Image 1 (cartoon, helix red, strand yellow):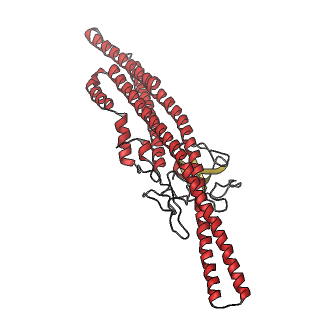
Image 2 (cartoon, rainbow, N blue to C red):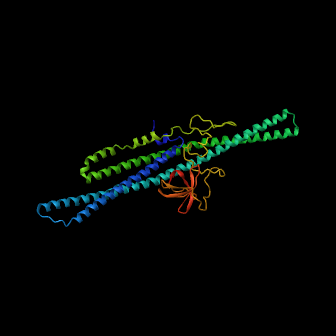
Length: 392
């Protein structure tokens, strides 16, 4: 069985699981760099402490062999101070700073991949919404057509006034005609979804492959940098040789394929791609499919909920606009309902969204079940994704 991203995340919320993993990886890289920066700072402070101690005891006066022994101790301490100073500089220059640069480059590339994925998903979401509306119209008109046909038939059997019968028959014929039109729109919506499906699958699969390659590169890069970290300790502190050997064994056992497969095994959402819906006549409650991962009319598939959609609903639910984001964010500073802290950097896709950095504090003005909330930061008001923040 394949354990690649592109074969195992087609179930509900599958792409969100992969995106979350990439965001976690980016944060891990940041923390790796922080660890190295702090270790470098500790080495520098230790070196400075040794130099300060040497200076404060420089007036110590002895003679003969005791003086020789004391001078030897001072000489060893000077060498040790240099070792720790050089170690700190190397950790910062050769490992921590390149790691931060790598994270920045990966973030830019990942943003490009995700932007393409959001675009293709938006197109699919629009088709899904049209399909839902066309089915609702069809079922409603079919129901009214049946009801009016029964009323007209009953009027005939009861020998009611001919004028009334003619009116009832005309009304029934009107609803029957509406039913035919809505049926055509319903089937057309399904056909459009069917035509779009191969393109969506291909582009989504490509994005998943690109994200997997990026994660593999990240794991391999971290492995290389950690080997450099241990090598620095080994070179500059021979007395920790045994510890370095044990660490080398662990680090050299890092395997990008195994890590990827482990992640997939523990988080996969399903290998079955969504099944194309089929036509359901009149008052059918569902769009029938052959598999469990069909496009049902439940809230999990089309209503904008997060639990049953391949992507999180990127459109803010708005009944008056057919599910699109609000065209204009609130102009005045409203009373916040809560305060949240950003987990990741976010750059808005348009003027209706706000930008922020990880650890920024945001005043939430309005929450929404779609996952797109309205917030204020630094005098700016706009939409932002709620899965990028945590409540404080």
